[in-house]
Image 1 (cartoon, rainbow, N blue to C red):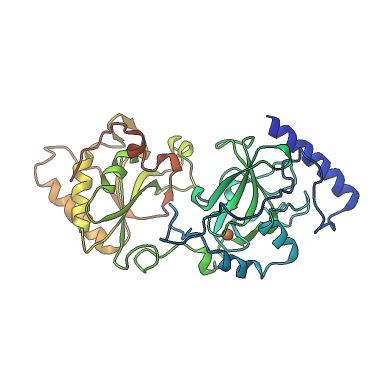
Image 2 (tube, helix red, strand yellow):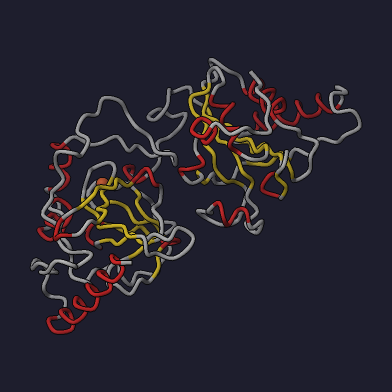
Length: 377
Ligand code: FE
């Protein structure tokens, strides 16, 4: 609450300053007193920004978030104008109500102005009334680094780009539902790409199967078998499985939250994305594991969970997966394994995979909670 009041005060003062002086104050410090929530800080990206690039790191949504070395960031930053350089590299703040993205209401993605990493989506933008572009959640939590900022006698949380360490703004806990967070941004820290526009390579996810994030032979499969916690847990343990990620698929809302999915109105199914090395494990073996883990004869439910989001489904990425999944289901149906019970598993082409919130990832490993699924290995 203290922070909220401080920031509203900051907004009011900033509005007065802007009203009096207009927006041509770029370059001048936006705020000059303590108590301003988005006040300029004295810190710069430095010692605690990860420097080494020992091994590549990928975000849950599939982007390369390996920390760029200082010299690479310096090269990128050298292309910035003086104001953007001051704000992104020296933790500056632009004047309130002056940023060019404050009133941008177009659909699209906001990427880092320095390295191009997608940071925010238009879907999560809201009018906070503070004078700075505001979002209630990031594009992917893995794309943002939080850092305690004690400048100006306050304790705030600075946000930086996870890949290049550039200063973005701050995050506060007075945002709207569903997160209750308010990510307060400088427009110059961001670059906007309208929906449908061709994104530069640095703003695109790595190409699974085409090299980059995974071994050249990596493949992807998607399985929905009720609550994703246990399904993800056991797929993680599969020999030849590179990664398993909990998420949502087959719905009609972009960037769905868990709460939205649970409302049973978005059409999504809790789904596990399995990245695997087909030279070490076959798609057929994944299918076998999937059908061992869950009960495919249950319609829109699994264990204690009921609802369409808990439906059984295989979302195929190509015709070969489709053929193999359908053939295996046919084989199971005639095997007598399920008696007279019908296999309810849906087989559909994969739509967009939306990674679930961070707290759902590796939930069983972190919390040790029991689950309805069986160990298939
Ligand atoms: Fe960046």
